Length: 259
Image (cartoon, rainbow, N blue to C red; front, top):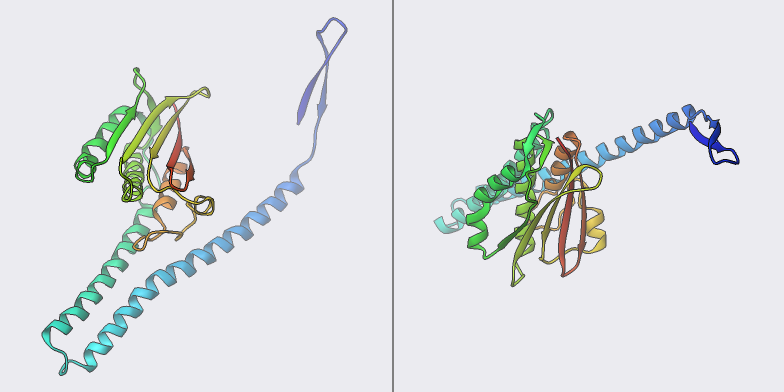
């Protein structure tokens, strides 16, 4: 429904024009399209899980078969090499299963009034040693007055740790390594949490696929970290957007409801 005022010659509202449109059929078609899209996504996710689990399991199977056939031939060093390879593949499977468990661990977040700067202090305590060891400077741009957001503190801290891990990895080839965190009370009475690094950056195609399940540019990555981040934030009525330029760093912007 759209309502528009009708003004008289004196500039006062003399009438109103109300235009109504029945959108029932539009909504029905939208729901059908959404259901079809969901099925496509589920098929893609299951296919990806099968691939992610199948590769290391197949590798373990081959290693054990070769080892079994050559037990009397191989020396201790060769046997140890095959065992090490198998254990490495098992750890990859364990990591994937742990990541999938994290995907559902915050299904019902405990949303409460949270001091965002106090939460940021916890992040600094957890990461300062690792940042110092890698010669990464953490720059903070914070308001004078405290800002309170409506989030689950545990889940949001997990989000920040994930973003920090990604930023650290992106800074490996950078000389003056810097992560900048800003807290802004924006004009829509929301909190904007900005997370930036001056690392390697990403191509436009990579940015578009960042939140797609199992999409990763890391050799050891599962492609689920940012998917979990986005899901956690959505459960807390928050949103996240990413922007990046190759060779110039990456910017993550989170919008948080104000308490």
